[in-house]
Length: 326
Image 1 (spheres, rainbow, N blue to C red):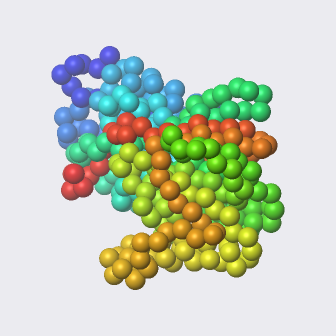
Image 2 (cartoon, rainbow, N blue to C red; image 1 turned 90 degrees about the vertical axis):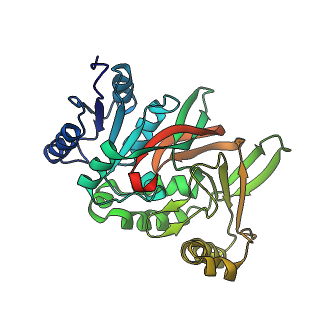
């Protein structure tokens, strides 16, 4: 156990994603300068992508958990740290860096990120939780910090070539999207939003968002915010090639460019929905599918689901951000 009078940090790191020697030097320098004790170092593995290491850090009574890795590491650390009040600092690494993007953190400044971990301020954000029901009737629970998706979204993740992703980064998803668009299967879903009536729908994609920005300046959910206490739902069902063109134009140009400025917002107006793309907000969602479908959380595949129950936990995760953002 750490000395009660000395603050201690733990670094939960993915050894594939980080330069450990460089990271150790940077963390040691900042911890020593801030008067913190010796840092606890915990590696992820194929068997434990971060939850176990985070629980070990929490059991040791650390004052800060630094998540050093890609989106999978961040999601796993957040899942284990949610509701504990122990702050989590992000050292962005990998292809997406989804939560870091949505928090407007610098993505390519590891020394600056380490400085922010020890000298920053704490910001509470929401976290999404989903119960996944499998075909055999079993259920498992997972958290997500950015998005959960089914349909085209999950198939795109499934089709992404990991070797190409490592070499080409976000461009690898373009190839995966092209493969996924050839899949004519649609989701037949019964779902209920909050206490509303049960609805039936046929869609290509169903996405639940805690926040809405993706790489390449894509603003998938223009109204989603990490601290509004709401799930943002996006339902997509283009019925033709031109429907897909309209969806892509709205996501990449209208949302990704115009809605980021006040002048652009005035130009396009408030209307978000059309026949191809629908948005709404909720605090919880229950959905049942006509057959098992792929589900993804924060860019990682989580197998097939026949039903989900999802909700938002407001302010359940404390994130360390640079002092100027406080």
